[in-house]
Length: 120
Image (tube, helix red, strand yellow):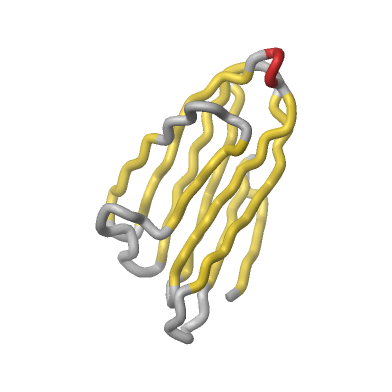
């Protein structure tokens, strides 16, 4: 398994390539972010080189640890793409560090996350 992280146009791009050994593997990436009081929009586009986004349980997950009641909206434009987004508030009392977490499970796929957290 190989893993790369880059920054492109103000967003983070993660790429995970799983080996061809046929065994399922799990990878998790975490990044702390400092958020001041305000309204934010979190969005991510996840693409795979194979049609892995079929069925009720996709092999990827995104979380923001420290947020209560975060509701991610998801769309699946095609079997190789999944998009996530949510808008959330950070109050003055809750300003501080939050943890972005991406998780992927696969055996022979390449998965790319393109994420962005924007202040509104």
